[in-house]
Length: 221
Image (cartoon, rainbow, N blue to C red; front, side):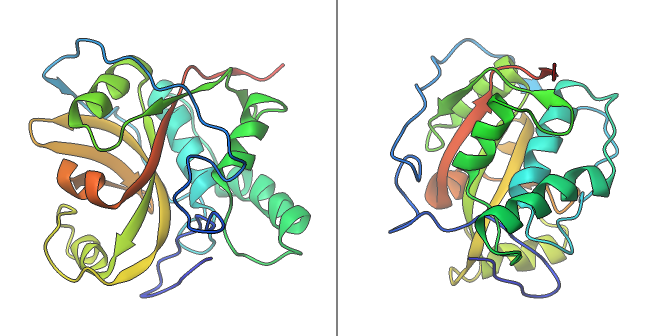
């Protein structure tokens, strides 16, 4: 389901029947072991861009591209590079409708044929309810792909360039995916709609659906 309000596109398809099973195909990634991690990991110096997510429901594809950039900050993607495989996805699974993507399918594609010229050998599950686990995974793997419910309160936060917190309206707005790419003290940093945003771990723990880290990104053969 893609819900559009205030000109913002989401793009995480609902996993039937509830949207909350470990994966829509019933599989689960092994949870990454927590490792010692530094006090802070600065987000990489990347000129983040929406990669189509302000106009299309391609947040799953955009988040994967942002994850690659977190791994290799010199990498640049065009909007067309990210939208092309997303539009192929929509024609294959949604009869061309811009309804968002199932992360399970897109991650499988990243592991097999690759995305945007990059491939990933696998993903590690991350406990999104644990601030320690998220920080450990960011430090170890450079990024965490977070599937999350977006509330109307957070939309107001985003419009004000404020951190995403539990304050404000809890009304459901839609499902979204972002790449977490850094942290400092009590904040996690992620890329949403092409902007680096701060999120409180409590918001992530409360509204997160699941999280996973790409084990590595490599040039696709």
